[in-house]
Image (cartoon, rainbow, N blue to C red; front, side, top):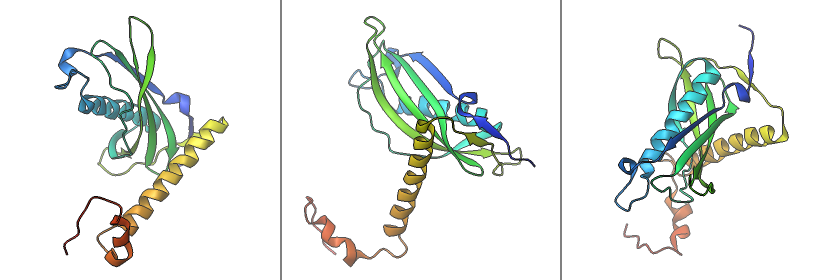
Length: 181
């Protein structure tokens, strides 16, 4: 099979939804879990458009809620493929909320979802490569590689197998913990 490539614009997806009271939590702000569900949906759509296959969520990078979203605000989520592997891709998502009365827009969240393309038998499916056209595209791709490297290093150093307690115990000295081994 000849290697195919796609432009990021071919798979970009933006969704917008007006936030209603049914989406709010006990403090009257939009529930973070609802926002995460929307982010998963837009990541799925973006990854599926790029791969041409059904995609599943493999992992979610750090999710920081930067600003609360209010009932009545218009939430928009823009997604794009930042990195591609053999069957996996990293989808970057930017979440913004607009006050529809004033037009003020605030950045509420950014996150990265690792999605895996699946074939009809439920096995990993090969995906097209990514055409990068700007320095920003290259930066996003390289940052994705760096996040994967850091994740792998973290899981190796602090994994159950081979964790060296003596090597790391001193790191707890400045925290409010009491170790009773």
